[in-house]
Image (spheres, rainbow, N blue to C red):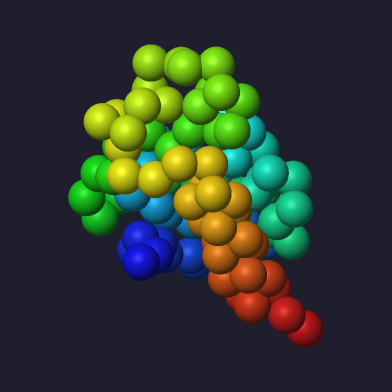
Length: 94
């Protein structure tokens, strides 16, 4: 089940929402690959699904990488990045 996300384009700027508190790596991946000149990520929207840890955080037993801290692990984070970028790319197709 994919979480509810939204994307909007305002000229050369994009805004994307998601219900997670992202680990920094996910936000960096989305912004780096976004076709927008500037991409803003709004977290904890449409409910809160908790932390979205990276694989490194899960392996290191980071406090927010436990199952009780959220609903998804690093596989969900990779999926969220791909889905967000797919939607952003649709907004900027020529």
